[in-house]
Amino acid sequence: MTRYLGAAAVAAVLMAGSAQAVTNNQVVNGSFENGLANWTIGGTNGQAAFPPAAIFYGAAQPYPNGAFGEAIPQDNSANPSPDAVGNRAAYFVSDLASGQSLTQSIFLNPGRYQFGFSAYAPANGFANAGEARFSATILGNTIANYMVSSGPVQTWQHFFGETVITTAGFYDVSFVFDTALVPAKDVVIDRVYVAGVPEPGSWAMLIAGFGLIGAASRRRRGALTVAA
Ligand SMILES: [Ca+2]
Ligand SMILES: [Ca+2]
Image (tube, rainbow, N blue to C red; front, side):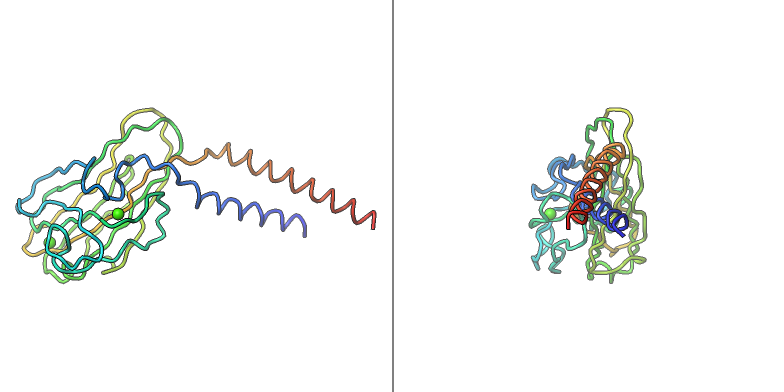
C-alpha cells in the first residue's frame, strides 16, 4: 500500500513537473505583444493590402487592428507558454496567399525541448467559401497541417511537440498559410513557445531522490509503529 502511494506521488510530481517545465521561452515575441517584431513574413501574397497582422483581442475593429469587425477572445487553450496571452495575436487573412509564412530562427544548444502554439478560426473567415491550408513546423517537426474547414470554429486549440536537439545552431519556428479564392478562411495564432525541459537522466535522478525520501519516510513510520 505504501509502495503504491509512493508511485502515485512520483506520478503526481512528474505531471506537475511537465506542466511547470516551460519557463524559458526561446521564441522572442512569441505572444505577438510587440506586433510582428522578430518575425519574418515570407511567401507571396496576391492581396498586398492584407499581409499578416497582429490584431487586438476583443476588438470589433477593421483590419489590421481587428478581424474585420469580429472580436477575437483571448487564447484560453491549455498552452503552457510562460508568456502571458496579452492583448494581441497574429492574424493570417489574405485570400490569395501562396506559401505565406511567419518565421523566426532561434539559436538552440543541445538538449530536450518542448514547443507549441495556439490557433483559432474566426467565424467570419470560416464562413467564406475559399479554403485555407495552415501548417506549423517547429524545429523540423510539423505539429499542425490542416484545412481550416476541417477544424473547429471560434475555438482555441493548442498544438505541441517535443524533440531532442543534438547540434547547437539555428532552428526555424515557421507557420505557413495558403489560400486561392476571394474570400477565403483565416487563422489566428498566439503564444508560440520553444522551451528546454530536463533530460530523462535528470528525471531519473529526481525520481531516485524521491524514492530515497519515500524509503526514509517509510522507515520513520515503521520505527514509530514499533515504538507505539
Ligand atoms: Ca498574445
Ligand atoms: Ca481571408
